[in-house]
Image 1 (tube, helix red, strand yellow):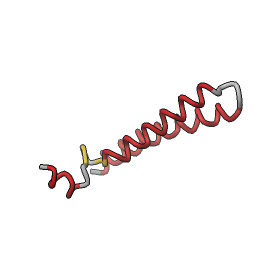
Image 2 (image 1 turned 90 degrees about the horizontal axis):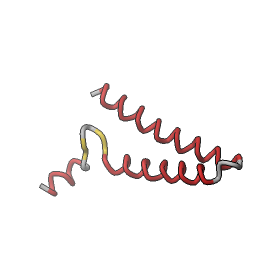
Image 3 (image 1 turned 135 degrees about the vertical axis):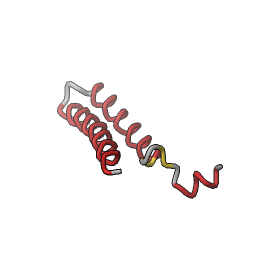
Image 4 (image 1 turned 180 degrees about the vertical axis):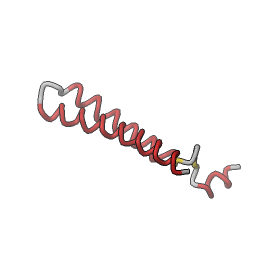
Length: 68
């Protein structure tokens, strides 16, 4: 079982799992730091970057599912 998962790159539903987890954690961290620093322009930038990262991940997943 583990060998089969290792050979396939551990894909879940036509998407790679670990890059999605990584981008999700980075985006959540950007949103959290941006929300903490929301009074400064850097905080707004980090907040926007985190939201765009999450939105990009959703768009990528939808496009990958539609193309299959």
